[in-house]
Image (tube, rainbow, N blue to C red; front, side, top):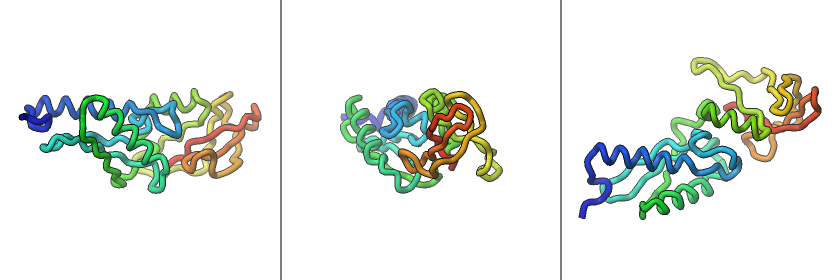
Length: 172
C-alpha cells in the first residue's frame, strides 16, 4: 500500500499546500472573525513517510491559552478531510509578530471594531507612542484605558472624538 507521503513529490507538495490552506481556514477561537492564516500562526503542513501530517503552529505569545483550541480545531479539520493522523506541533521560533497578520486580517479586525496593529519596518523597532486610529470613526485622538483587554494581546482604548471604547491589537 502506498501512503500519501510516498506519492510523487509534486503531488505531495500539492497535498501539503492544500492541507496548509485547510488548516489556515480554521477560525481563531478568540477572534472568530479571523482565520488562523489571516492571523499568521499556521506555519505549514508536512506529510511524513508514515502518513501522518505535522502542522506547525506558532502562538501569538508563549502563554497563549487559545493554542490548545487552535490545535484541536486544526486536527478536526484535517481528519475531516481524510487525514487520519494529524499532529500539531507548537513552534516558538521564529516568533510570531503582528506583522504576520495579513492585510485581509487587518481589514477584518478594523471592520469588527478592533484597531489592527500598526505594521513596523522590518529593520527597526516597534513604535510605542504613535496614535491608534479609532475603528469606529477613524480619529487618531484616542487614549489608553487599560494595557489589557479581553485577551492579553489586546489593549482597551477609547476614542476622544466619538467616545467609543475599542480593543487595539497590540504590536509585537
